[in-house]
Image (cartoon, rainbow, N blue to C red; front, top):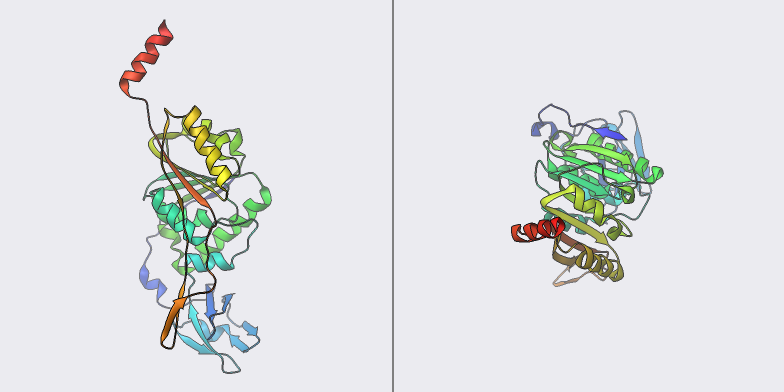
Length: 297
């Protein structure tokens, strides 16, 4: 189990003005290629277009331009969460930022929410959840593979400790557990449950017991058959406990402008997964009375 409590120190935006030693930054060349480095006084970064001293970056404002020893111009920025995810170490297939954004909205992850995530993977969605729940919220994340849990822990620590814009002080409390959710859920009265599992229908019984009424269940799966089986199981066995709110797919296409022409990029991030959303509900009072009477007879 890994416990990551939020510090009590209030976050001050003026600390972000100057880039400091120990920060993780991205250097972007004229072709848009990114180089990720952690700044250390006295060190240097070398690439095909020359060498850059870390001391030349420390103390600059974000968005400054620097030159390498061979004259290559580089833009210095703190990475966004999406940019950090693209460069971080991955132990398993991650959920793409476009889907993370949709998940945060469709699951309505609000400040102060208590959220359970199953399938931590490399920690991409976990970081998005931590930001969304805020200081008063909590994210509990289950992962049954120890090696994935360790990769996720290191990625999360790196983002919130070394990326200034990660806003560690404003993010939620995190509890990482090496646990198989198919065997049960320890937490109760959860506001949201997010499942990134190959067989989410096997967890519905546990979700029914742990998700509060009105709470949202969101499942992320890559194939039609998985979503169909989940939907059918919900309809046949858990119709009184859940109402399906929607099934979604998100596509993201970039555009480019060259000279006098504007056109879509030749490559795009199309299908990556389906997002299945359901809400926990309770049977109406008349049905409860009828079931009570039937059981009594």
